[in-house]
Image (cartoon, rainbow, N blue to C red):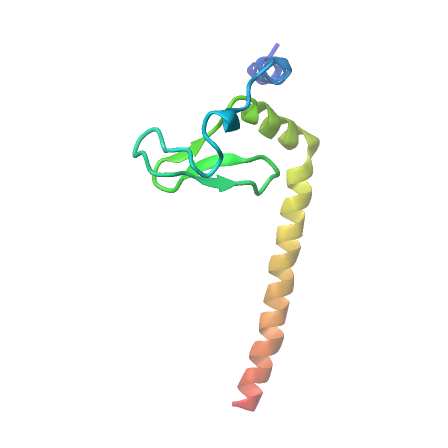
Amino acid sequence: MSDIDDLASALDDLSDADVGDNASIVPPGQRPCPICGEHMQIDDTHGIDIDVCPEHGVWLDAGELPAIAARARSGERRSRTRMIRNAKRDGKISGMLLGGWSLLLD
């Protein structure tokens, strides 16, 4: 068994574990950073609420790492990456077209 398989197995075990919800202790958006004590922001870009301190990084609650791993295994990120790539391409095309018109009209 490889290290990747061991990690995947451990993450599956964590996702099966009965974990509590931290929202009952400190509501999201009011959680302090363990380092500086400032309120952390909530990032839910991928459908999982992740606590983020702009200066000190990401802090995961119980069950969030297995959820992120499951999302990564599902391939959803690849399709989101494709959407971003297409949006960038479309933006470049629009920029070239509008830029060309602005040169002609100036």
